[in-house]
Image (cartoon, rainbow, N blue to C red; front, side, top):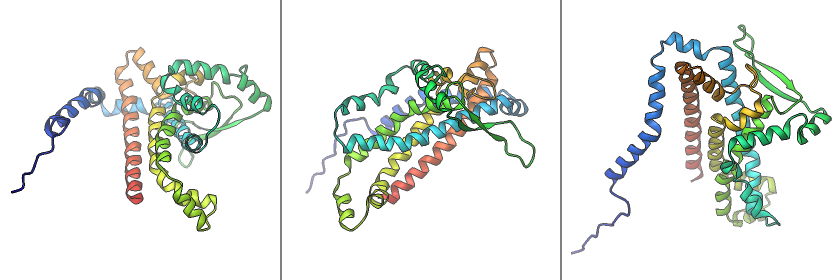
Length: 300
């Protein structure tokens, strides 16, 4: 007669572990989010709609999400390149550069904002060079609710980085790069060169090897890095508030709008903006997670 020994689990059983997990998530995430929703429900639908459709609020939401999207895309492209260099090449100072990638994690965001503003202002080192070169930057700025048949955004050209939407993108790119690099780097480290050498022996060039051999394995990690960088950028405040200039309808971000509402004791208005940011962020992250899961299934 065979004796089946029950495997001992290091952690408590499923019921107790699930209870602790739900309690922790409730205290840290669910209850604060429920408080935001409850505060918003004190408003009538008409008041809520009036709060979130004001020209300055819509412009701030547009700037926050559009700039976060651009910064996340930039970080996804160059984060893959940086991770590839760190994994595949050995050079002098590699460990120092690798450690510097984590600086945005530890550096206070206000310090980063002041440093970027000093660097990219018109009298700053980088800003003066760009100004002397006459570099201009396009930006799709929100112009309010347009007439029927017209787009609500307008293409505006800027000749400066600091105190412009371009500065917001620069700040969000700075704080979001580590999320992509640290997500993609372990995947590249686990990949062997056998498949690349096999593809080369079959006649594939470098571009074909990258897109058909390397990219399918890295793609899920890239999507995760993009989601993390985007989520971090949407709610960023400290590093953006200095370099943005905070001009209403131009460079004012949604988190700053919330702070201003709270300083005016307009808690309902602040929670209205917060609930819009929460819903949009949740929907976008849900779509990204579904896409990532499908890509992971295809890869397996």
